[in-house]
Image (cartoon, rainbow, N blue to C red; front, side, top):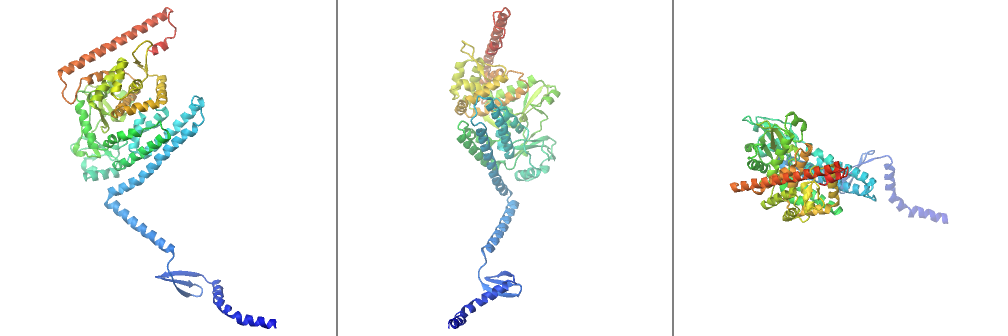
Length: 593
């Protein structure tokens, strides 16, 4: 009975289920021996079983991957076509796009290097006693590694970064020697650009090729600097000229680079509050921007030539305005040598004392008399050659970076320099305050770039005539120990004085290469006295000339008297030493004088 009931159940109750699953089971059995391919036509999906060649038509929509592939392909085609059109028909806009992309890379590189340097110093000097030998060894290693990182980043970034690095390279009385040695490469090494870029600039500025504008044009540059490279050429009139061509992307990337530098300095100031130099860049930005205008540079050169025409040993190259633009400057070609090329100077039989005197006289006249100061006189920008008298002639090149002093500031600077040489501390204090600085002793030390001494019982100060290694170390220690005071001084004085400091520092570095054959402080003091009675805005009167010569005569007499007193006192000390009434070692006493 039970068996019969089960048979009826399975026969009648399970039959509908079997009928329902039969097609599915049949399809699965077929799937074991078949593969499927899917195709889309319009809105319909076709599935083909290759083994039976049967096609099943189902209605549906394409998958997400289908549309994604087509959107990406369309985007690439449209983007590529747009880029090609812009590059061909709008090359300047295309260049700005590329500059923007590279600008992000320079920003990333600058931030990475800045943070790496900060972390390097923090980590390596952590828990070290600043007075220990271990600290001195560690900080020298930090200086070396950090300076190499900085120099590599400056060269890769190029442009305004190289210009700022060159300025740092002249501060060898403050910066550690590891930085000076690494940054020295920036004076002579710069990345050159291809000739295609030169042709592009000539096409944009003159609508012709260099070979069309000149009778001959050397494709290979003879020199490369931070902002431009120089090619030799010959005009159709037969004049040999130097063609200075600005790097094509500098004007477009200037503001972006300045934003990056300001941001980097703000970050450094946040991490190291003592190192706040962002105000320097803010004040110098307009001056640096004007250096990118070569027409402005040409005008500076012509003004400098007019104001120095009374010095027969100074020459400024002639400007060829018909072959110049805001990015191309054509000047007279100069056959000369760099001021630091001692070997070639000796081959020309030129006297180093003569060169030094004329160099100091030229720049002293600009600082104290005209107030229109060449702010970038590094060796590549100042040449020396034989003049008509077979003596040295100073040739001033690259007049892009100039600083003009206010007449009042120039007069106060003249008085301050004169007072410093005479050792009159009251006058030093008076004219330091006139220039906005209260800390007169540190200010005059920075200005003169050498330490001073004060003899016991005297109210006058005197500056050391010859700087030794110990004096250099003292200056660096002062910069480190009184950094806050130095920063306050730099912020307090007129901004124009910053580039004057750079000029004075560059002169000091050049004369140091010659072995300091002259006393530049005395020579500059004579220039300052002449500057007190000069006025280049109008012709100097006979009375002013007589007054200037009289003051110069009195100043020279004063110096001779001081020298005579010093010689007399030293002779007296040596006499006392000879008769046994003075110590055998007089070196400390003589150095303190």
